Image (tube, rainbow, N blue to C red):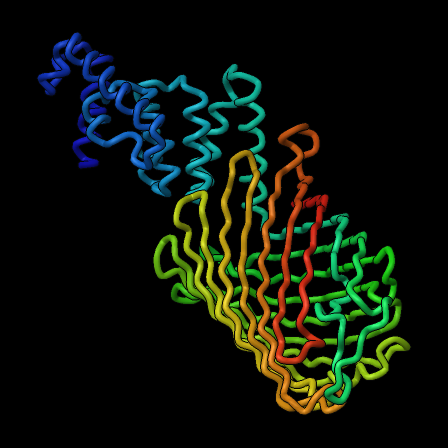
Length: 458
């Protein structure tokens, strides 16, 4: 069918340039050809207004091969469906008939860039820059040229910084019942220990470097440094700071990608060192279909908790933690991505009452809304079972079932003002609900957050 499509385009081109008879009988009659093109365009417009996914049937393109606007809309439809190679073929044939369509040529260059045909994409962009195209087309062409130059660079640096504000309606994770068990007896909490709302200001920053190596299918080595600080307005005992270092490599072999990573985290609680964590991880992923990726990840943490003036029994949590996660990502459309994650955690602790097993399942969905905006939703279920009871609370072994729901919306500020490119604003909502067989650990928390982030990279 694509071969027939190519023949039709070449026939129209020959007819337009050499005024020779067309082998397509219907297209020999100008009035019938025009009627067919108008009919195909009308059908395409009606389908687009109806919102159907197959807005322009291929039969309409066959009926109107000389309608360039219709064919360009068909190419955009192919892009939205993920058929980049088909879109490149369609756009190339349009440019054979109308080489002066600068916007079409820029779209063709963008498709070539996404196909990683950088040399061809640069050639098309320089053709656009060499002509007197509209200012917005030239600006976009220059932006793509910078992306191509960045893609060709072997060493990359990036920096990230963000400032956020949040609100929690139960920041201290107080029991919904306002009672805690003490040796099996319910004790009414004092007012300061009950549910407390609080706000916080957060700051996060990071630096990263990566280096590609290995020829036509490059491997990558990378290193990252991160810093986080959260300052509570009222409950200062929950002020947090965290420093993190990590490094690893991404290796490709027979369709698989292996990413071993090592790292160190240093966490402070209320200005006192609370946790030192050395960890190692290995992630393995593979695309089993063009739009489906399967992955698995193993991580080991050597957690050393340190006693602080506020958490005198922190060392009880010291011990190894092992995480096994498996998942799949499915790009249903170029705008919609679904993910599922299955997890298992085994936490060992110096005090056996702090050791537990966790099984979890998570679902997430990302929707690209256009102009750089996006929406994200996730739902996670966690099931924790502790090894032994903490008899100071109750002789029953602890069992917790938690549900975490999250919604997030983000948008680049360049939507409003182009010089703000690189800045992203996000706002989110999270609901945490935990049901436990011990009233101490049954609680809910609703969190609202907003954050302004900036990312720079070369």
